[in-house]
Image (tube, rainbow over the protein chains, first blue to last red):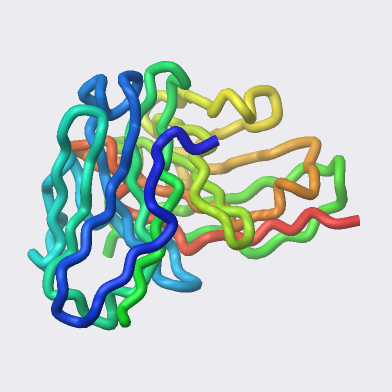
Length: 111
Length: 119
């Protein structure tokens, strides 16, 4: 069961900025646990995109940025490129479940 | 380079068990934890549980308690995930993932192992 809710899909033209929301509750994001984001290209394993709410691992373009506020987090992609077409997942820890949880996932389409 | 290499695809009958391996290389195995994540066809990611490669402590997802066992072999830097009493809805790609040093994000992922449960 996914306790982190994301929009099923977002789309944008090349060069545009899109944002993906990740809505949780007081037992996960709202409790102060970090939010991480992953990108999954078709047929491949997920790749870490943002860790600790807003940090980029080495090699991730600065077009990707993350933020967190209250019980929600967001991933922004600026200067959208065709190669950004993928599924994106948020992830955090949930104290009620005593384990990690993933968001429902968002498919990004580049028009 | 740092990598996790998983065992090959499996086909099992309902009620059987499966054991997937995840061999680590390029880093000190006992300094990190390993989580297992699965993804049913066309579905999202589901966290299954975590094991400390340092001391073997585990934390399993409530949904899988009693059916899953995670272990490590530090002599070969390999993590294992065994799932028992397989059902058709266990059909999925199973991933192992390393928990990062400075956060609990999963910074390195295996390539995935397809497990098909079918009679």
